[in-house]
Image 1: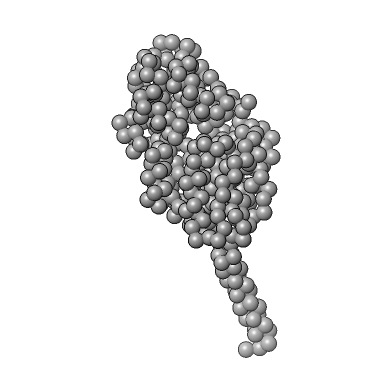
Image 2: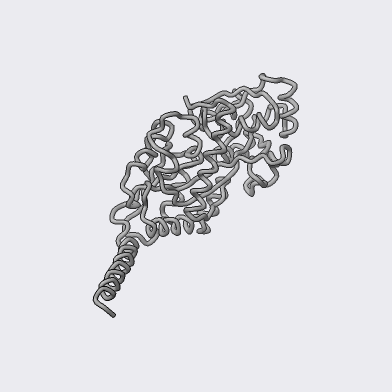
Length: 325
């Protein structure tokens, strides 16, 4: 073997050792400080609840904890932007809901790109919306609601957490598919909207399961239908929209993101931990009580899912002319 061959072999061996050492170091030395799970919405909401369930399991065995950091403002923009601008070292992560894929279509001039400026780490959980009505509302089923709405176009109100939210766009998708005219009443969040539906101020709302289930179980709200592809284990007696409108589906989801450029070994480890966090029996039981189910996906599959969601809701936003306030 000549000197050039020996030199090339030495370089290859050194490069291989460096890569191996880098991956090993990332696994052994990470994290070097607490890992922040930035939630771009208020404490007590569904995304916050998911993040707080996942955080302890994510950090199992670490010297430093994973802590939830609620960074509220700009309809999620403030918290998301903080993560997009963070160093891609895994110490700052984003836990966000399906609004992450909707916001580009309803808020122009975002200071970040929801796909390119983030690393998709893990899809944590998915669940349907549930259409709820005040118990005094005349329609007790989805077919009855559609028939009533067709007989009274533009006379029935529905609440949402705000213009351009997932609940709003899913409601607009329902209106288009059913051929009905309901009047949108936007609120500043799911909590006040739910409160007014419980109080009878507004008769209907397509709500997230986490907010709706306690009121359904207490008899303060009536569940008409869920938007998932199948019936929800949390509400097994509630029909799906697809049983009346074949093919209709609109889910809410919760996922973990990092800044763009997370090193592949670190991304793989965070994905593994996030997937495992959702499979613990205690976490699974709590998620089920919230009306959502854990999901285990690769980062690549999650990225493709987000890209598809961006396209889907962009079309709904265009047709409904939805914009954030």
